[in-house]
Image (tube, rainbow, N blue to C red; front, side, top):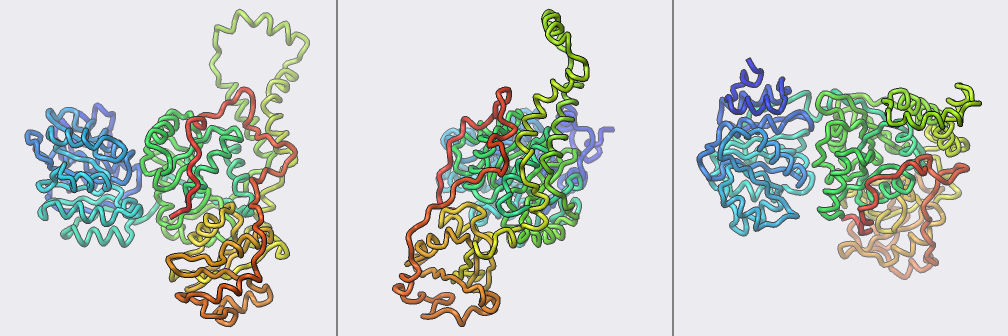
Length: 609
């Protein structure tokens, strides 16, 4: 008997499963489908991305709704347009033998009138993003007052994206007696709150442990100097010639910048973030799925709709603000039973977050060294040799062999092999032969020691954790506000009502000038230079060095006092290049054209909200 038939599914659904080539249910499907078929109850299912959650709630919903009725009976909420469309397509495939089934996708960026017309034709199941769904409800274009089943898919990510109020309002239009099925990779307090507010004694299914990462993913971290982050990224890509990866950055600005740098250096890269138009996003994702893009640089929000099973690596260019978000990132690889690698590039001050993530995912990170230039040359040479060895012979080359043989008549086999592979090897060798050893940097020149004290200025700022800042958020605020590079702000130390940070001396005047008479939400933000000799003493309280009531919540000292610190605005530093004899990336060659970069416009450089 078919394994899915044993779960209680009807023949027409089992036939659809057979058509799709599914043979064995995943763990979440095996645990969830019988429960949902046997009982009309609420359910909380905790399982990682890529474990088959859509089928786990999709088949029971299709079996339980009345196909002959045109009333909307099922509502599925998902965080992004891409995921909404993905679920819709999968539900249609699952219900291909359900005559009269209408599954309608409702999402932003498309005609609301067309979507409303599809609903009017009788949509038994609606798959929607919260924002567009709320809009259609307010316009009375959709009626969910009679639904019997509500699914919150990727619930933790929807709430992380700020949809709590939208979800609450949408669910308020649904009947109390419906069944609510909540699917999530992690269980933060916001998800628990939704469960308590809208669910009645829900059943719970957990695949693995709560917040635990996929068992098919190994986790590695690379410790580098703060200024070597991008060079480390390139080396990790060069050391894995067949890489097919998603690279995560925290902000849209960094995402666009890293993607542009990779494209400029000859890598097949593309950017995916919120400042792209819907058409641009579609082009990027189409290129990525076709593997024309090998390195997709994305923000956490934009990456939620990525459903590609062959991703070999996830690279955390920057760690996320929330530790739980790492689980979502690493879940992009190691899908459908395949193995994957999640890499993290960190500076010394970020290593403590690795330990926190280990506790959450219940897996240990392996500390690895960034490959040296010669190690990369060796990997690339062997990869090239394997590629040539495995290449199938094209018989159409036969007419030209005589001329080729004549050309190499005086060349021995060994010499011919050396000549052939030198063409590829030399590009990487010339690029890396005088490059610095990032292993040394990771061991002794991390973020806290990379910059000499005599080239660094330490500042005090009168905002802290009570104002909603941790060290990452404060670093992003300062970087974006001052228009500095990612690693120009370092040694960030956040206290309750104030914080400290460092920049290079070259940025000192710029920092002081910018924060003269600077207000945020009607409050003056004070920035002052901290004396090195009193730095440690002032970390504990900071009260003895400020005057004029400049503490948390105060209006700051007299603004005229700042004039003595003001100076001419210095220019921000330009893009740094790798310290080697060749300015060109080894990826840049006449026979290699980067894909995915030409169609994407530069994102607006706006402040991160």
